[in-house]
Image 1 (cartoon, rainbow, N blue to C red):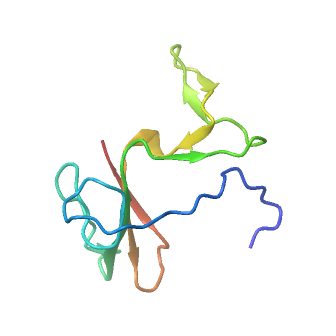
Image 2: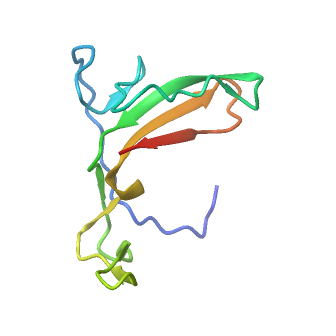
Amino acid sequence: MRSEYEPKVAFKRWKLVSSQAGAQEHKIGGEPNWLLEDEAPATYRQTVPMFFLMQLLEGFTFEKLPEAPPQMTLGLTGEPEPSRDPFYRLFLSNNLYFFGTEDGEPLVYILTQI
């Protein structure tokens, strides 16, 4: 555990509800709802089987704490500039697909689709 780390993201409890198969929602477990073709990794290093953990749809945001620094974005000039939004976005708002292994190595493997 890192004692010097200062949190930047506000805690938010996820409320999980049942949904219909194929619904375009964030989800944990089951099968991914691919935006494009199936890109699921079969194995890690060609020997360790991988399985689907969860998916987050594009536009998912994390509320940042007031003292946290702003997310940096590319401005119109192509130079980095601070975002005015009170939240962070992951991977430029692409759909995210998380995979893992039984032994936890790697801890998480993430694919993005736009």
